[in-house]
Image 1 (cartoon, rainbow, N blue to C red):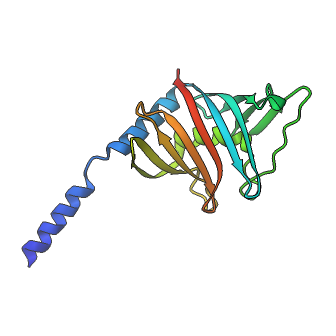
Image 2 (cartoon, rainbow, N blue to C red; image 1 turned 45 degrees about the vertical axis):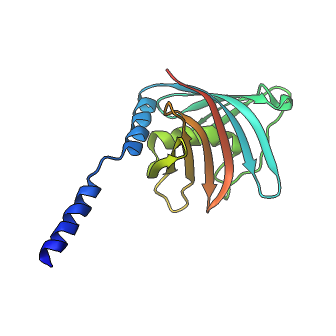
Image 3 (cartoon, rainbow, N blue to C red; image 1 turned 60 degrees about the vertical axis):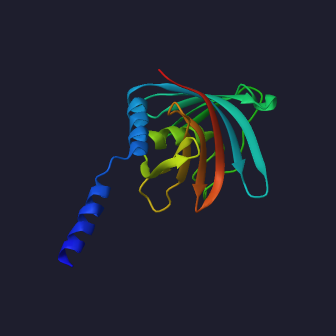
Length: 184
Protein backbone atom coordinates (compact mmCIF):
# COMPACT_ATOMS: atom_id res chain seq x y z
CA UNK A 1 0.00 0.00 0.00
CA UNK A 2 2.80 2.44 0.92
CA UNK A 3 4.54 1.70 -2.37
CA UNK A 4 1.35 2.44 -4.33
CA UNK A 5 0.88 5.78 -2.53
CA UNK A 6 4.52 6.68 -3.15
CA UNK A 7 4.18 5.80 -6.86
CA UNK A 8 1.07 7.96 -7.22
CA UNK A 9 2.81 10.89 -5.48
CA UNK A 10 5.83 10.58 -7.77
CA UNK A 11 3.59 10.58 -10.86
CA UNK A 12 1.70 13.63 -9.62
CA UNK A 13 4.87 15.53 -8.80
CA UNK A 14 6.37 14.72 -12.18
CA UNK A 15 3.25 16.05 -13.85
CA UNK A 16 3.44 19.27 -11.84
CA UNK A 17 6.99 19.93 -12.91
CA UNK A 18 6.20 19.36 -16.59
CA UNK A 19 6.90 22.06 -19.13
CA UNK A 20 3.95 24.21 -20.21
CA UNK A 21 4.70 25.22 -23.81
CA UNK A 22 1.61 27.44 -24.01
CA UNK A 23 2.63 29.44 -20.95
CA UNK A 24 6.18 29.71 -22.30
CA UNK A 25 4.80 31.17 -25.54
CA UNK A 26 2.74 33.72 -23.59
CA UNK A 27 5.76 34.71 -21.52
CA UNK A 28 7.90 35.08 -24.66
CA UNK A 29 5.35 37.54 -26.09
CA UNK A 30 5.31 39.40 -22.76
CA UNK A 31 9.10 39.72 -22.83
CA UNK A 32 8.99 41.09 -26.39
CA UNK A 33 6.31 43.63 -25.48
CA UNK A 34 8.22 44.80 -22.41
CA UNK A 35 11.31 45.43 -24.50
CA UNK A 36 9.86 46.91 -27.69
CA UNK A 37 7.14 49.10 -29.15
CA UNK A 38 4.25 47.66 -31.16
CA UNK A 39 1.57 48.68 -33.64
CA UNK A 40 -1.66 47.07 -34.79
CA UNK A 41 -5.13 47.58 -36.21
CA UNK A 42 -8.14 46.82 -34.02
CA UNK A 43 -11.85 46.45 -34.73
CA UNK A 44 -13.68 47.07 -31.46
CA UNK A 45 -17.23 46.11 -30.53
CA UNK A 46 -18.69 47.47 -27.30
CA UNK A 47 -21.66 45.47 -25.98
CA UNK A 48 -24.03 47.40 -23.76
CA UNK A 49 -26.60 44.60 -23.66
CA UNK A 50 -29.28 46.53 -25.54
CA UNK A 51 -26.97 48.06 -28.16
CA UNK A 52 -23.63 47.49 -29.87
CA UNK A 53 -21.11 50.10 -30.98
CA UNK A 54 -18.37 49.21 -33.47
CA UNK A 55 -15.37 51.17 -34.70
CA UNK A 56 -11.85 50.60 -36.02
CA UNK A 57 -8.58 52.09 -34.79
CA UNK A 58 -4.89 52.06 -35.63
CA UNK A 59 -2.76 51.75 -32.48
CA UNK A 60 0.85 52.33 -31.49
CA UNK A 61 1.96 51.13 -28.07
CA UNK A 62 5.24 51.51 -26.25
CA UNK A 63 7.11 49.17 -23.94
CA UNK A 64 5.82 51.10 -20.91
CA UNK A 65 2.21 50.30 -21.76
CA UNK A 66 1.18 53.71 -23.12
CA UNK A 67 -0.91 53.61 -26.29
CA UNK A 68 -1.82 56.13 -28.97
CA UNK A 69 -4.65 55.51 -31.40
CA UNK A 70 -6.38 57.01 -34.41
CA UNK A 71 -9.94 56.08 -35.32
CA UNK A 72 -10.14 54.77 -38.90
CA UNK A 73 -13.87 53.94 -39.16
CA UNK A 74 -16.70 54.72 -39.25
CA UNK A 75 -16.07 57.75 -41.41
CA UNK A 76 -18.19 59.99 -39.16
CA UNK A 77 -15.57 59.78 -36.39
CA UNK A 78 -12.46 58.94 -38.45
CA UNK A 79 -9.41 61.01 -37.60
CA UNK A 80 -10.09 61.33 -33.88
CA UNK A 81 -6.87 60.54 -32.04
CA UNK A 82 -6.11 59.77 -28.45
CA UNK A 83 -3.61 58.61 -25.87
CA UNK A 84 -4.29 56.08 -23.11
CA UNK A 85 -2.01 55.24 -20.19
CA UNK A 86 -2.30 54.07 -16.60
CA UNK A 87 -2.58 57.76 -15.64
CA UNK A 88 -5.63 58.40 -17.86
CA UNK A 89 -6.46 59.34 -21.40
CA UNK A 90 -6.79 62.22 -23.82
CA UNK A 91 -8.84 62.64 -27.02
CA UNK A 92 -8.08 65.06 -29.84
CA UNK A 93 -10.68 65.98 -32.45
CA UNK A 94 -11.76 68.87 -34.66
CA UNK A 95 -15.42 68.79 -35.65
CA UNK A 96 -16.54 65.44 -34.23
CA UNK A 97 -16.99 64.42 -30.62
CA UNK A 98 -16.60 60.90 -29.35
CA UNK A 99 -18.88 59.82 -26.55
CA UNK A 100 -19.47 56.28 -25.40
CA UNK A 101 -21.18 55.32 -22.15
CA UNK A 102 -18.77 53.79 -19.65
CA UNK A 103 -18.72 50.02 -19.07
CA UNK A 104 -17.82 47.81 -16.09
CA UNK A 105 -19.39 50.05 -13.44
CA UNK A 106 -17.67 53.13 -14.84
CA UNK A 107 -14.17 51.60 -15.12
CA UNK A 108 -13.82 51.27 -18.90
CA UNK A 109 -14.45 53.28 -22.04
CA UNK A 110 -14.54 51.38 -25.36
CA UNK A 111 -11.59 53.35 -26.80
CA UNK A 112 -9.42 51.99 -23.99
CA UNK A 113 -9.91 48.36 -25.14
CA UNK A 114 -6.63 48.14 -27.15
CA UNK A 115 -4.72 49.66 -24.23
CA UNK A 116 -6.28 47.10 -21.87
CA UNK A 117 -5.16 44.28 -24.18
CA UNK A 118 -1.59 45.64 -24.35
CA UNK A 119 -1.37 46.38 -20.60
CA UNK A 120 -2.71 42.96 -19.71
CA UNK A 121 -0.37 41.15 -22.07
CA UNK A 122 2.55 43.06 -20.55
CA UNK A 123 1.76 42.40 -16.92
CA UNK A 124 -1.60 40.82 -16.15
CA UNK A 125 -2.13 37.72 -14.05
CA UNK A 126 -2.24 34.74 -16.44
CA UNK A 127 -4.82 32.31 -15.06
CA UNK A 128 -4.74 29.80 -17.93
CA UNK A 129 -3.01 29.06 -21.21
CA UNK A 130 -4.03 26.34 -23.64
CA UNK A 131 -4.77 25.52 -27.23
CA UNK A 132 -8.17 26.16 -28.80
CA UNK A 133 -8.23 24.72 -32.30
CA UNK A 134 -5.08 26.16 -33.91
CA UNK A 135 -4.72 29.22 -31.65
CA UNK A 136 -3.25 29.70 -28.21
CA UNK A 137 -5.89 31.03 -25.81
CA UNK A 138 -4.82 32.96 -22.74
CA UNK A 139 -7.06 33.99 -19.88
CA UNK A 140 -5.54 36.93 -18.03
CA UNK A 141 -6.86 39.17 -15.26
CA UNK A 142 -5.88 42.81 -15.63
CA UNK A 143 -5.14 43.10 -11.90
CA UNK A 144 -5.24 41.18 -8.65
CA UNK A 145 -8.16 43.29 -7.44
CA UNK A 146 -11.58 41.88 -6.64
CA UNK A 147 -13.18 43.77 -9.55
CA UNK A 148 -10.51 42.70 -12.07
CA UNK A 149 -11.38 42.56 -15.73
CA UNK A 150 -10.86 39.17 -17.34
CA UNK A 151 -9.34 39.12 -20.81
CA UNK A 152 -9.48 36.09 -23.07
CA UNK A 153 -6.78 36.63 -25.70
CA UNK A 154 -6.15 34.40 -28.71
CA UNK A 155 -2.71 34.27 -30.33
CA UNK A 156 -2.20 33.22 -33.95
CA UNK A 157 0.34 30.73 -35.31
CA UNK A 158 3.07 33.39 -35.14
CA UNK A 159 2.27 33.99 -31.44
CA UNK A 160 0.83 37.45 -32.03
CA UNK A 161 -2.54 38.55 -30.58
CA UNK A 162 -5.40 38.09 -33.03
CA UNK A 163 -8.50 38.55 -30.89
CA UNK A 164 -9.50 39.52 -27.37
CA UNK A 165 -12.66 39.51 -25.32
CA UNK A 166 -12.89 41.69 -22.23
CA UNK A 167 -15.25 40.43 -19.55
CA UNK A 168 -16.55 42.11 -16.44
CA UNK A 169 -18.47 40.21 -13.81
CA UNK A 170 -18.69 37.22 -16.18
CA UNK A 171 -20.19 39.18 -19.10
CA UNK A 172 -18.38 40.07 -22.33
CA UNK A 173 -18.38 43.85 -22.66
CA UNK A 174 -15.77 44.38 -25.39
CA UNK A 175 -14.50 42.36 -28.33
CA UNK A 176 -11.29 43.34 -30.13
CA UNK A 177 -10.26 41.82 -33.46
CA UNK A 178 -6.56 42.47 -33.96
CA UNK A 179 -4.67 42.46 -37.27
CA UNK A 180 -1.25 43.55 -38.55
CA UNK A 181 0.34 43.18 -35.09
CA UNK A 182 3.97 44.24 -35.39
CA UNK A 183 6.68 44.45 -32.73
CA UNK A 184 9.47 46.91 -33.50
